[in-house]
Length: 353
Ligand code: TXA
Ligand code: MG
Image (cartoon, rainbow, N blue to C red; front, side):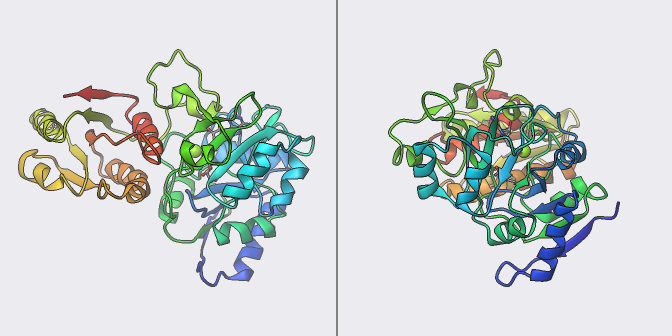
């Protein structure tokens, strides 16, 4: 299959290209598209055959449910029931935007899309290209992140191309995404609303709208006897090809600890990468002997850190890095999403210094 790459200007999206993309979805094909979080791999959410194709293109286990993307709030009533009061309040506060809600599904949504579950994950993205594309596609687009299963989610169309070239009909290139980490997922089907995956919409933000919101304990916990509630959080996701270790402690101890580990790995002939911050990169340049030192941005700017994390993990992959060391980040607010993805990438390998 030849994969067509269409460049879309966010300010003035080409209506004709979007119409062609929508047409592919209506015919049962697959199109990757930008959202404000990461690129999605879209298919018709109401067509079981499309969902099967998505699983095949990603190499993803078919018991891992897909998110259904909509482009008008009221369309939620066609796919979920009941649409609870909590759902209405969250939608009013955070939609369109980087929040996914889990509700009981209606008949219209095939089980192939929900990985066999009776619940459905629904998201109304804010990206105007995503919205226009979903509209052209018929209103209900199932989309996981547009990476091969086990690789970091794509924040640029180039990375979608790396993973999906020849497997899907079209990629809509809308440039770099704004957030860079996947949406917050909140499950509204239990007694208490529960965060299954942290994201840009934080627990604090959710609690400003709903009184109390729980967080699935497995999100930052290495204890694998606990079973995450979102099937996708079970898999070793976001995994770079090399081994990543997070080094935790005071800033001075972390710099010394990472420099020591880096020199030892170099002595063994390994290719070493360091995930640094603007505040610390110069120290590693002077002392670690690492092959590559990449800054995720300033600690003062968590949004920048979130946006560059997956890109940096992919770059280390492309450079065939054997071992990587990363500093740790605060796990409050948006930092919780950053640490959740970093811990997963590291397979929870953390060393205290
Ligand atoms: O930001 C995002 O959410 C991106 C963009 C493309 O919208 N999408 C995304 O999809 O991250 P995906 O498939 O990579 O991750 C969806 C997660 C998986 O961990 C899946 O198990 C969980 O959502 N999920 C989906 N439906 C669910 C359900 N009914 N119950 C529990 N977890 C569900
Ligand atoms: Mg994903």
